[in-house]
Image (cartoon, rainbow, N blue to C red; front, side, top):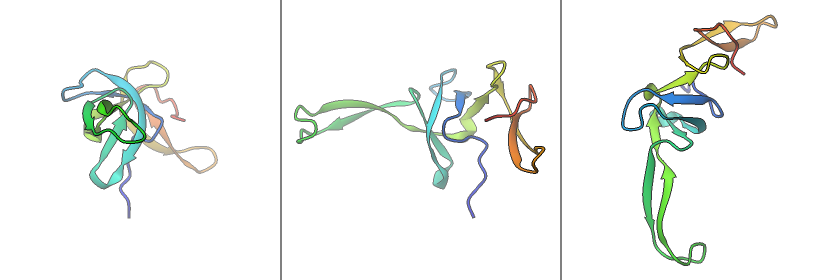
Length: 107
């Protein structure tokens, strides 16, 4: 059985701890196996590549590295401030995520 994660692909999050603290971005990918996420423009790594047919020049490529989900916090859709996430049943009996600060449902 896979773990439940509060953060999903496409969410806008802020980094609350680590070298990238204070930066925010969109979640590009979730890696459930080791509780990590790749966030757009956060935790940039330099990857040295050899020349090949795709990149004839080779060189250094900047790309996002994974960051642990415990260091991320979802941004409230209404206020734009960091918030915790709760789950509740909506009118149709479906479980939905909501922002604890504003009570607003997260799409």
